[in-house]
Every structure is written in structure tokens, then in C-alpha cells.
Length: 412
View 1 (cartoon, rainbow, N blue to C red):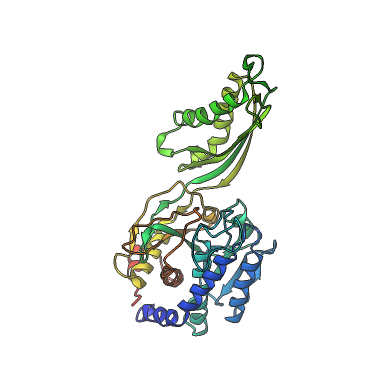
View 2 (cartoon, rainbow, N blue to C red):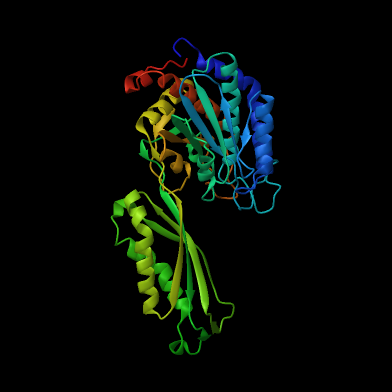
């Protein structure tokens, strides 16, 4: 790649395509679709790829797709974006606000999808010009917000023959033009827990003659997280947080059933593996003390995303080359869950955080909120980053992988 003006090539591409990409993102934002129901989104992406001369293949369940750019010998690098939305009402006052009641792209997946589409179109041009030293596998993944999307891709052979994989996620804490990188774990494991508590029920005037189910449920809600904090190494950051609680229908009647639902997050894989048995034993102990029965449904979600160090170096080199010096900066591991971790259980790769905040802005609409939005200039930033990273990884895949060779990749 030495001697090529990749930054100039990306400038020229985006000069003619950035407006189209912003419009594409706004269309997706207006028509969000939930996990495994992303039929319109899948079709929109497929149609644009076909128009660019590519041959996408829809995944077996009918949403999400795979597509190959390039051919012949050489390494294969995968780029992944998630395409689903959240069951969250859109609270923005914008001309592109969601038209689907109770559903919106509150996590930026419309941005991820558009960025990967833009990178796909640029890399397809590179392939036609004979400038792609290998193949790029495009993964437009369904259902990141539910366990199953990444596993669906894996079951369909989505990373078969792939040497490395890269992805990114919107980060409203970072300014546009900045990329957050971290070698090692960058997200946490995330599971779901549902507790059903049952008892005989009765009159609130005589709690001593029955089992006070609501009181017992309240003790479970508070004592389980407290006990966990004393049963595991604090450095593992094992966290149980409840998101839904329901019991009873009358003020003077002790109900016979109640439910609590939440998430279990953990930075450490060993503690993650031990969590179901530990929580189950604690639940039984607390419930037994108040004469109620508690049953637990524990659903494994996603493992931590653990970034490969060499892949992070490739992202950093690409960012410095096409975004400028100082664009890549360290970031911290979060307790957020992300099913990109399933890919990294099989092949090396890295996940980056993409700045979406307007520089100088003091407004912060966090992800998973109905007010979430981005500075749309982040789309061009993301296209530059993914395109340059794919090319960096392909060229480095053709030579011994060393820190020195990666740092020496010429972008401008």
C-alpha cells in the first residue's frame, strides 16, 4: 500500500457518496425493525449492493446478509455491522424520526449499517481497479439486541475462511473524528435473569398467616445484588441489575405470584461462568427465609468482547492514516454487552468505539434512550476507518505480522 494516496481516494469517494449515505441512514432511522424482523432493512442493503455489482446472500432466517468483495488468493477480512433496532419510542424532534410506534434506532445500528455499506461501495471500487489484495466479507448481522444474531451468522458459515474481523459501535461520549481503542476486553459478558416467586397469597391484614410475597420479592431484589458483591472478586465487576418487577393487583391482597427480570453483567469470564450457580444458590437461600418458592430462568447472552492486540494495532494505524494524528485514543472496558464477542471466540479481530458527538457540544444523549442521535459526519469517519482497516489487514496478512510493519503502513 506504500505510495498510494488512500486518504485522497477516500476523499474523492465520499465527495460523491456522503450525501447518499446520510440519506440512506435517515431512511433506515425512519423505518426501524426489531431483531429478526429486519426484512425491509435487509432488502434496502441488498438492493444497493446489487446495484454496485456485488452478489449478497440473505441469511437462512430471511434477515441479515453476507456479501463478498474481491476474489482470488490472499487473506480474507470480515467487516460486521448490526442492523436491528430497539423497542424504544423515538423522542426526537427530527425530520427523520421513527415512523414505527415504540421502535427506534436508539443504539446507532442504522449508522453502523450505513457505514458498512459505504465501506462496501468503496472497497468494491478498489476491487474493480485491482487494488484489493484479498477478499472482504461483509456481514450485515440481524438481532444484535437479542441473543442469537451473531450465532445465526456463525451457523451460516459467515466467518468460514475469514482471517480477521472488525466492527465498530457509536459512542456519544467521543467527538466525531475520534476512535476509542483497547486491546483485551472492551465490553462485558451480559446475561438475562428471570425470577418467578410464588406463595399461598392472602390478606394484607394477616401476613403472619401466609407468606408475604411482595416483601420476600423486595428482599430478593436487594439482597441478591448485595450478596454477589461479597461473593466474587470486586475486580470482576459482577453486576446484577433489575429492570422489571411485577406483583399483585390490589392494595389489600398479598399476591400468590411475582416476577423480577434483569441483567447480569461481568468483566471477568471466570466469574461469568460461575454466576448462574452462585445466583441460584443465593436465591434459594433468600426465598426460603421468607417461606416463598423462587424459580430462576437464566439465559446466557454474550461473552466479553476481547480485542486481539495486533488487530487493535491495525485499527490504530488505519485511524492515524486516514483520520489524522491523535484520532485514535485509549478507551475503557464497559459493562455493556455486545455479541461481537462470539466472533472473537473463533477468530482474531477488534471492536472500536466511534465518536458521534459534535465537537464542542455539551449535550449527551446516551445510547438506548429515545433521544439518541448522532452528528452525521461520523458516517464518513466510519467509512474511512473500516475501509482503511480492511486494506491494512489485507496487506499485513500477506507479510509477517509485526508491530513495526503495521506502524509503517502508508496511508497518505
